[in-house]
Image (cartoon, rainbow, N blue to C red):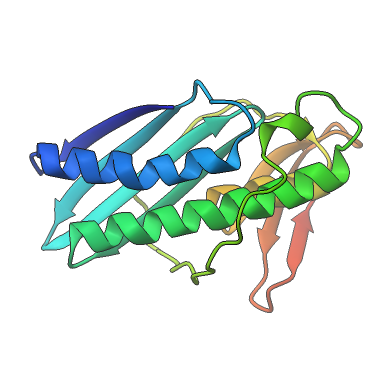
Length: 181
């Protein structure tokens, strides 16, 4: 894997870069073959809070985790734990649903070790606007994608109805679907 580490409002030292690469290299054990993906890591400091965001583009999905704390190294540790949890969850669901399709099954190793689970914090501050192409998918895949990026909703093109839909996580932990009328 290729590591792209950059800083915002902070100078990324060699020690920080090495620590990020060492910690993120733990994720390679979950993949069957060495991925040519680029792991994008952004480190920033705002009002004394150290934030780390990591995005890993994979075929058909994007794994993303973010953590803010008083210590940059602690933020890195928690982000890696979150990504491990996402990989395990994604691997289980994808392998269950798409076992017959070629390529998907070989993305993850079958003998990967278990992961500690951490609760993810919710952040209510609008930090950016994104534009993207809607990929046709079913509701279950949209929920999976929403959980993989760590958001509370996900906009997608419904493969069954050919319309734009939104899935969202409800306060009781279940999911909802918004359809056009």
